[in-house]
Image 1 (cartoon, helix red, strand yellow):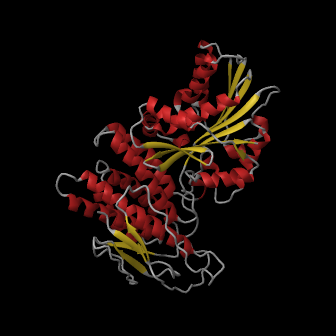
Image 2: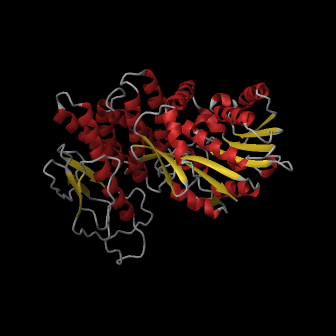
Image 3: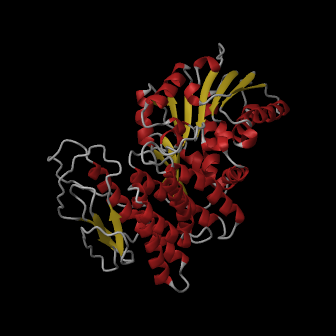
Length: 511
């Protein structure tokens, strides 16, 4: 049975003290406001605080009120309870750093991280050594969080010590949590080396997405992710369904594809669309235009392959490449023609335009809105990896990618080379971008559906609900997607998840 975990953080934080939560099997908590740097017990969860990102230099008063017990988490890790923190905030009208830290501390340290490790390690250590495996898992997550705090506080000496321990325990071919931890250790190590006394992290010229500068190993891993994981294929299927609905009864149709699915070879999404248009009864498509927007050198090759494929099916295809990133894309680049129906498609791309300020994304969305497409179809990772605080992003992304690695653990054997390639050459690159990069270098700025809904509304778009839950579930069965994946409708969007943890969301928008 998993232990009860309590949070004692309800007051102000002065950036100097270290707090320890007791997560021993007794279920009691202890609070120690002492400045320690070394974990003294495997039963204590170290939560140091620093003022790494506090914008206001003035000190704030700290007061600790009665802790909120989070209860016993013996159920599914991903179905964590809602935590009510109705504390008195009348003492200040300004949202302090402590409000964000308290939220993440309660939600992730207590309700999720420890529970996930214990559940996962218990499953992997069922034959003997069960208690030792659980203790090792809890110790690993303790050190991982402590290292993230040390890196955030620019404590290189302490972070280096913790990184050495983590590298020895976060095994690439270990349990699913050890494997995902190894990727986060890489990210923390890179962030530590990039720490500068003054200025942003990293000085490299940014690209449109992480695949634009991908190595051969990463490109191979990306192909495996497409073939084995249902995330992108699900997005393609649902996006094509929405596109076909928009093209119903039309003979001149045009698709603008932002990023061309990160340059995925062979244009898999549009092969499916071309095949559906060729087999469609009723009005025949006289011309299909596809405009691929992106910096990937492979786009022209993809267009040539699609042209041959369409010609063999009797579909007149015109393919054009606009070699620009989204920030520099102009309406004139699209070359609209009178009488044709336009659809804009974005697969895992628009989050790369999200910056610290909303200006870049707003400009892109307003430009798309000016094209007056019949529908904008968007597929995005449904997670909050773009928060203002590093520690919040770290814990959100750990929770998100732990679910993905858990799904891989169910689908593939422990020592499968394809699994290792996907984990270490693709997902690890996403994780490292989230953890180690800042400023324009950080492109993996995933956001939740609710945040996208607000952004789209500000740009003048209206949600077009997707009513295809039954078709989506049939697609999962038809493609023999492993048990554990779920599809739900959430406020007009379709969300593919692993054991109810959202992974990707498909949404449609109209002008």
